[in-house]
Length: 285
Length: 285
Image: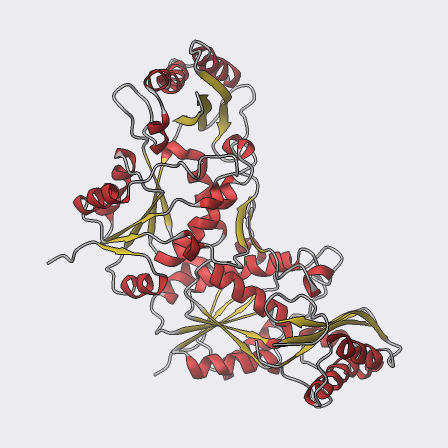
């Protein structure tokens, strides 16, 4: 008889319970306010692993002072209900004080992959991500960890960190989950008012337009970027931060003709809400 | 029947053998050219742990370009002979190319504890130390790791990193081993010519003079620093970098009266050779 899901908030307790878990252990790190995107990662972990740990922690160090840490949506009770249905073994739900006690001063940084795209827009963001993911890895000691392709740069940065620091963990990247009209699922979609929610479909429409052109044989990187931009420009509520057609290896822009795998990605403010999305062509993450 | 010591140079092989080791596993990280200081750590690990891993890796990222990476002393054959006598289970001896392959770009930094003392003299040193120790921890997954008090700041920085990043590892600091005349054992002592070797005793003499004064009741931090300096000044071959009487918690200088544990430490060039030493008063590391 399977034991009930345990919700744990203390590190010594986590270590004790972790030591009795059947392996392989799969970790799904989240900031809560779970949607189908998270659930798809959890289901994949449940299929592949003997034990599944989900972490819920809204990580302050990956938000800049001007960002949305305070109003980031939270609903722990509902999250736990969903996680129980997915037969998760452990929910690791530490407080900010446990994760970053007084005197905290250690940071994990990935240097090059974080210089472009989201890292350029949000200079301290990925330092917060790689630091908290290192801490979650050490606290939960999984054999596998699951990330969504929606945050493609995050997945690549975490995979680089995992390899560089010799964590004995496999990073598994799962497909972006989308609403019926194409909008990539994100906890931040809740910020959108009805007009913005409608406008937000422009991100996936721009990506699919470029992806379609690629599939028709278009290989010029600038043409693909221009195509995305031309679709985004049709939407008055969209304020474009960047469109990119980047090499998967280093996330630098392709110049001229794409000759390998490319990440087509974009970041757009719709109203006050920062939205990102991507598709990969010519390969996978 | 105990198996023979295994010398391992590939990470997949290390992971495989590690998974069969009896726990607790003790790790002793070294840069080789082993002396009685290293051996005392290994003996402590052998007493306390079911399995002992010693790493030998001259870590390039903790040397600045102007430092002694190239001429750092090495004698792997002799090291292995010593380690066999200590009944070490595994020697992890990776190449620089395995530790830092092309494209390597991840760093672990401890911010505040590295601002003073050796960290001030050697601004990139501790970033190299904490990065390589993180890698060694992930590669060998010990329950305990052993460091010498001779490198006191290193031990405190590593312990801080271990706590901050939630590594499930206990950091054990072992007493400094000394030659009969008081010189702290160090692989770098081999650089000293006979006159310098004699002059190098001034480091421990300065520390013991201040320690003696502390034991006689002296609590003024500046008086203790001045005492150390007065002894060092008697030695013409000694070029003082710093003398310090620092709070153990943050390695900032005590002002006025010492009211807790203090690290008395100093760094001196004797000829071209950078030597450090310390004693702790009013407590321990």
